[in-house]
Amino acid sequence: MLCVLILCQGLAIGQTSASLDCDYRVKAGEPFNVRVKLDQAPNVEGIPLIVFIEGPESAQLAGSVMMKPGTDTYEVPITIPPTAVGGTWSVIQVRISPSGRSENRLPYTNCAFQIIPIPGLVLPTRADVAVSASQSQLLRREAIQLQARIQQVKSKVSEYEASNHRGTLTPLLRTALIDSVSALRVTQDEFLKLGTTKEQRPNAEVFFSDLGQTYQAAISQMSHSASAATQLGRLIRVSDDKKSAEPLVALALRPMEQNELAYKVVADEGSLVFDLEVDSTPEGAVVTYFRKGDQPRANPDPTRSTIHSLPYAIWIVHLEKVGYRPEDREHDPFREPNHVIHVDLQK
Image 1 (cartoon, rainbow, N blue to C red):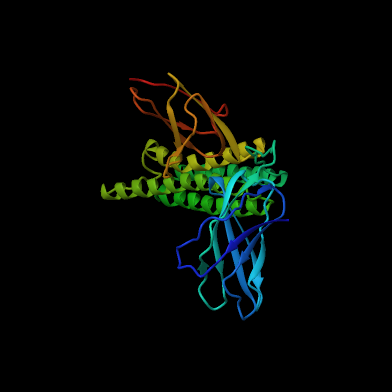
Image 2: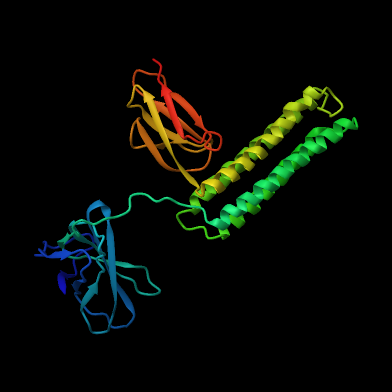
């Protein structure tokens, strides 16, 4: 077993002695100990002694032992995983953690050593996150219920029109939207309980939150329209000109129809993510992408490129190239199954 000697000699905090000869070669995956010699032994039991090491790319590892009364030298084991980054690693901190007291960082002698990486290490570079069969079945069932809810709203509107009802459409349509939001949340909870993995959960949350935002935007717009109509001394009534009510009905049905379509697409695809190809003429535009209300995310590759594993939601892609006007394109993956955006940049 390899050892590194670190001497703590009562130096003032922040000072270190000269570097020790730590010219060791440790292969990733091998057992490894750091030998620590303290300036004085503790006289009580149960105090952890912790050593931290750091390597390339700011990778850090740590190990600890429990100190014993009268013992001033310890072998602190640190697990070097097979995937450890190769290169120079150094001890960056030695500390003790007595219960009931604040942690105490000990001054220590500098020590660096080499970790040899496993040659030909193969790690995954991307993950395709699938929807389980039970999740697909849930979404198909909810899509059918949404279809029934849409038909119910249309039927109620027709009944109001046929009877020349004097009530306003706004409360009826608003209630339908609020009920749909509640159903969406219930579906999300059930979906997450049906075997959602840690990797899948963020994509599921984006998928459902995007649908929720569509509902909230419609509710807000409907409330605004009703408020504006009230200020004009008139609400849109079913008994008014039918053409006046049509935009309000369409406003309510649009997010419900979008929700139904989204459930069907994800259920049929068996996935919560898709790849979006972005291309421009001329090539080389800088690409960022975002959802409404979110901060833009930079795509590392300029056009022509592919944005991998986007959660199913409506995305806006922004392209910029020096000498050309910036361009935005909205991509609705539920209505545009090819998942390709091409932009002819204009000067």
